[in-house]
Image (cartoon, rainbow, N blue to C red):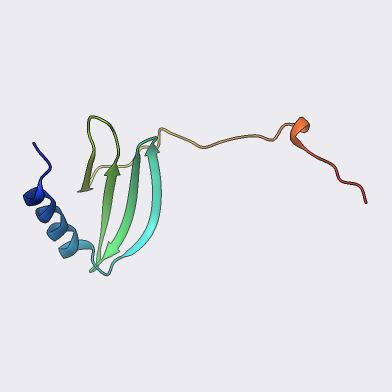
Length: 86
């Protein structure tokens, strides 16, 4: 399906109806190219998925459980610690 002005207008209208004035409660990154916003709006919770995948770029409201597959982690090794003397 092509992503043209008609599709864009439909998406904007749907998001405006459900999420306008809502509060972002949590942001998660389940994978390298996906971000999920948990939004509380009009007495309901919504999950807004933004995907930048090459083959599946999309933005939609989803009910699926978010499984985090991608973690940012790092450790400082002793060689990275710099001591300063005065």
